[in-house]
Image (cartoon, rainbow, N blue to C red; front, top):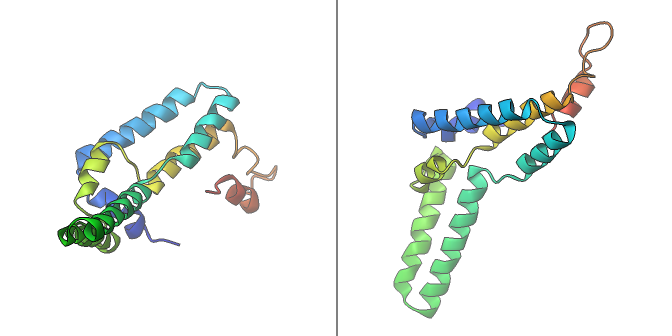
Length: 152
């Protein structure tokens, strides 16, 4: 299981104003869906499960640019291999520090972390009633039901 530090490292390297904008958008979505039908909530939850997080965006773009650098380095000019080296350096920096040059732009565009997406998803599952069965008649919490309802 990842630590809070690992889960929130992108947020720590994002300007507070950008984090607040992402959080406000998430809160607005949850509020807007609070009056929607169970079917609408299910559709939105399914969309959230397919939403690309910041890690996937960075990995996909980095691999595409690195591959492009290799292809151009082999077919055009060896200097293009510098693109591959630079992109791999950015990816290494992100993996070790939680920050890389494309991160601020992607965050300003609203690309969220997996934890941010999951917060919205769990809130919508709560609204849909996925947690209604968690409490037993005795008032105790049915841990198995709780874990099943919060599965990612």
